[in-house]
Structures are given as structure tokens and as C-alpha cells.
Image (cartoon, rainbow, N blue to C red):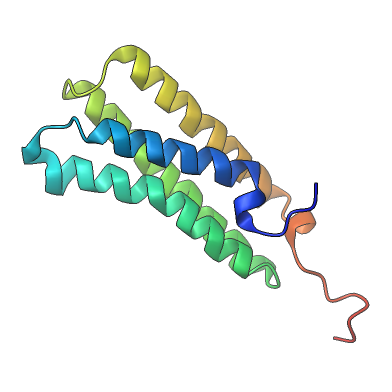
Length: 130
């Protein structure tokens, strides 16, 4: 399958699905968490996708690409920590926590693979007269 956009990446699709799951789930968090945990977990989970789009736009420059992917990984880790807080505060059950953490872990592994092996994603200048 040809990848024309970051949206075509499996990691993007998984991160997007996780962000939407977190959005729906966080609607049940207490109102006093609106500007704290609710806002933070929504921002960090969405930032994974947003930074992936930025990384994709910077594929001509390996260092920039890796830097944005590293930002994605950091946001994913932040989301994972927020999921821990949500469980420990009693907003989600253990089973849901385990599922969400597993999704974060899978996304993290995929991002780590891209960071460690970026070459296949980069735009090369070969044959273009650069």
C-alpha cells in the first residue's frame, strides 16, 4: 500500500482511535477535572496525531523528522501517565486502564521503530537533481 499521507500510517490510525476513545471516555470525568486531567489527557492524546502530521511534512530532513517523532513519543507517554491518574482517581476501571495502556504501549513501540529506522519514511533527493 502506498503511503500518501501521515493519515495512511497504521500508527496514525491507532493514535487517532485512541484519542477519540479518550475523548469519549473523558466526557464522564467530573466537571472539576475539566481544566486539569480532562483537558490534559485530551491534548496529549491528540498531540500524537498532530505531531505525526508535522513529522510527515518534515520528511526531507531526517533530524527534523526524528525530532517530531520524539515529540509524538513524549505526548504518548504523557497520555499513558494521565491514564494512570484517571484510574487512580477512580474515573476508569482497571480493565479499561489496561486496554488503554496497552494501546499506548503499542503506539510507543511503533513510534520507537520509526525513530530507530527513519530511512524508509524519508523523502530522498536521489534522481531529482538536488
